[in-house]
Image (tube, rainbow, N blue to C red; front, side, top):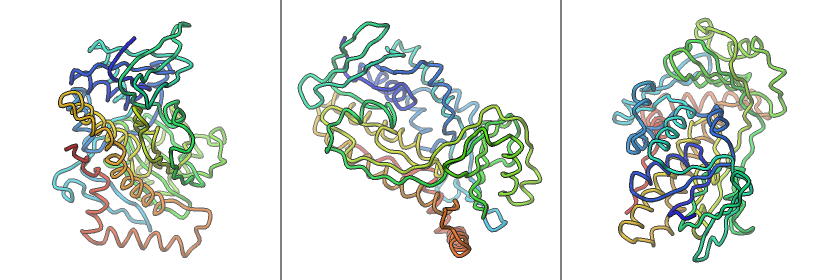
Length: 394
């Protein structure tokens, strides 16, 4: 079996890359170890940056997003018993974010993949990458109990933090940067109306909280918990009581509760590897970097990686500019580290750390007060939240 680009992983980044390449006439095949239902069952991000929204439109998969997604012009920071709104649209010259769940993005991309006739192999096992720096890169795997060899020219590793792609790079090539945070997010999904029209990020002496949503009738709420907490120890009632404690009183009074339809705890970490490429292998998204979800950057960073790799490959195949392949990692990392910084800053400002005392709590509140107290500070937050511009490929 042969293709131009082999894509490892059929999550949103792999599917989006495949869709863009297919539209550009570049042949690609996607392999995925999980089933489609498993991939769709991942409850993840829901805030899309302006750049990702534009990229989905370019890929021709935005019809349902534009119809059902919620455009948000701002969000709120709650601290010291008050709420402060960051007007994204006004502060960034018209940019906004879109509330549209990762599950729905994936569903739209799967439908587009099927409609285009693109090949996707789900449920593969024993995937291995070969000859990454040689003349004959290829992927071997087992599909329906049959061994398969997929010859290709380039490999895109879109298979996440635990995938085979990054693990296929020899030891000593990559430099890792990591920070593991001493807490997690306990999140629930509920069919209740949102407490507010826009997201609320809350700093409280008891810990962080986030009021988010998936639609006008489905909400996603989070509270910070210790890293050793267990989901089964948190009843719905205990969660709602804790969330109310961490919100301003007037907000808590308006909160409508209900039974959860999903509940989970996500650990928080910052992680980056350099470089993001090895020979003909290019790491994309979580395979190369992780951000804490506080800044809503994870899925969006994967999209910017996709945009970079796609635009490079288009120039390679249309103009023969293979020298651009060497720039992939440098271009991606320039934007990634800025997003890592913003996510780290939001996490540091809004969470209670084990060593947070009264002084540290007051410092957090004062820094937040400083930033929201000036137009320059609000603009800094806003331009990072809507997403920094994608790096051009010249």
